[in-house]
Amino acid sequence: PAGATLEDWSGDGTNALFFAQPQNSTTSTITVLNVHTGQGSRFKIFSSTSYPELSFTRPGGKAILFQAGTTSNGTNLPVQRLSLTGARQLCYPTQFSRAGGFNGTYRENAAGTDLVLSTQNGLEVVSNTGQPIRALALQKEADSCDLLNWWSNESIVVSCSANLLAYPLSGGRPDQLTGVRDAGTFLGAWHLPSGIYAEAAACGTTWLEKLN
Image 1 (cartoon, rainbow, N blue to C red):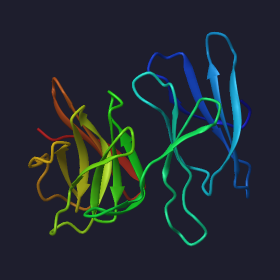
Image 2 (cartoon, rainbow, N blue to C red):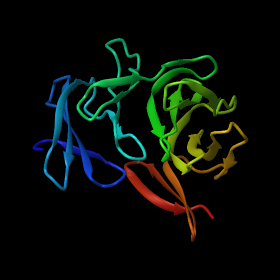
Image 3 (cartoon, rainbow, N blue to C red):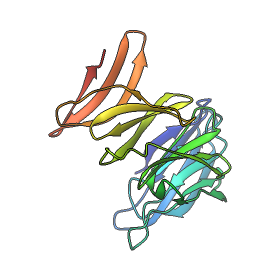
Image 4 (cartoon, rainbow, N blue to C red):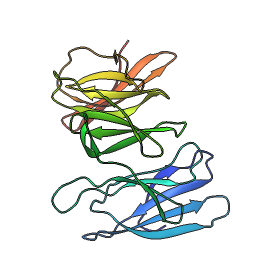
């Protein structure tokens, strides 16, 4: 679609997910396109940001996860699950007893059974039906923790005070992937047969480094 950005692919590679928002507008268009047939669906939706969190559900891409930014007073809107034609199926919770308020970022595991939501006090694991499961990354010594990418289907990579940790969804102790390091922001980490690699950024530059 003209003027749209490609946001995600369905797990089977059949459908592509596009997002478009005119300048100075809060009315956005989401398009689901079957790349084999050229057919698809398109619907309008509110978004306070031109760069929302948006993805197909896992593993089969049968629905869409969408986070539309914030309200006018800066409160983060909930993650919504939408049908492929735009019908709202579920709004995920935004307040948690230990983890605090949702702050705008989510990750869904490959099996589609759980989501991890970033919060004011760390992270919250939530089932795909919207039931809170447990809080993670509630570190007193950490100034803040940023949700990055999946380490495995059962653990998530988090950057806390410029250190990388892999938190198991079970609530067990995290694996520390890095120690004290120079200033910079981690963007993700992955384990490959040749070792553990992380992407980092600082001063307008990004780089890939081997951690072991």
